[in-house]
Image (cartoon, rainbow, N blue to C red; front, side):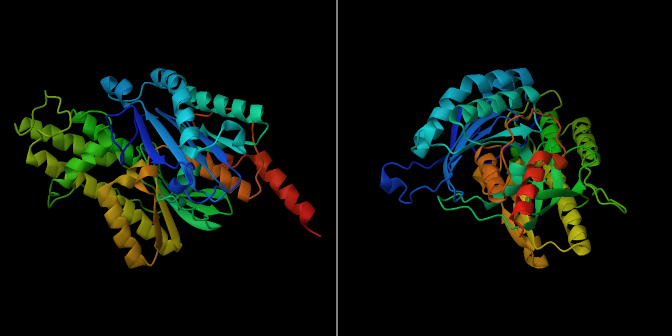
Length: 404
C-alpha cells in the first residue's frame, strides 16, 4: 500500500502533531473530562498514539513516521512496517501519556484500528490495545479506519473541544487507498460513490514514482503542480453514466503516456531519478498541474451530481488527499455556491493518526455502542462491519428495554 501524505514534515522519525500537556495548568487551563480514551493507529506505516477526553479535546497525538525505513523501496514494505511498529511503540505511547499529563491507569477506554490495512501492522496495534484494555479492565473498541477519517473533520486543532458529529451528514474520504462519498446516519454508514479502480491518492503516488520522485510522492506532486499551469487541453475527466462512481485509472494512464511523450521529445530525461523534483522542467510541472486539475474536477463533478440527486447539507472531507491545495480551494468554492456546510479536516489530522481513532470510539460510546474485544484484524473491511453487528444488537436491545 502506498499512501498519500501531506501536512507534516517528511524528514523526521518522530513527528509530534500536537502537544496538549495538562501540566502545568497554564499550558492547558481546562481540566480534562472523562472518559479519557487512548487511541492506537497502526494500519500502515505510521505508529500513532493519542489521548482524547470526553469533550473530544486532543490532549496528545504522537506519530512515529517510518519514511526513512521505506524510502529506499519507493513504497511501504509490510514486513518492515510491522517490525517498526513494535520497535516504535514504547517511545510513542510514553510520549503521548507524558504530553497528555496522565498515567496509563487514568485511561477509561482503549481504541485501535481494526482494518482495513496491512494485516501484520493491524495485528500489532490490536494486540497492544486489547492487552492494555484487558489489563486495565476497561472497554476496547476495534475501529474501522474509515470510521476514524469520517469523524476527523470535527476535531479541533487548537486545544478546543470537538464538534459533536451530527446524526446525519455526508463524508468524503480521499486517501491513498480510498476515494468514497458516504452517507452517515445515526452512526451507520452507507456508500454513495466509490472508486472502481485506483484511489485518487494512489494515482498521485504512481505518477510521482514514474517521474522518479522520492517517497512519498503524492504531496510532492501537489507541490510541483502549484508551480505549473494546466494545459489548455486538459486530460479528460472520467464520465460515469447512470450509476455514479469514481475512476482514476484512465487519468493515470493519460498522465503516464504524457510523461513518455515528454521523454520522446527530449524535454524530460527518462533515466534520471528526480528526488524532490526541483530539476523537473516547466513542461513537466504544467503536466502535473493539468493532471491535478482533472483529478479535482472529477471529485467536483461527482459531488455536484450527487448533490443534485440527493441534497447534501453537511459535507465532512477527510483523508490524506484532503490536504491537496487545489482540492481544498475548490471544495470551499463549490460549497459556497451550493449552500453546503463544509467541514475540512484540519491538516494535522488529514493523514493517519490515533486522535481520529480515539474520537471514533468516543462517538461510539455516545451512541451507546459496547466494546468489541474479540475482533480480528482485516485487510479488507466492508462498511457493514462498522460498527460490529453484535454491538448494534446490544445497543438496540438496550433501547428496547428502555421503552416503556
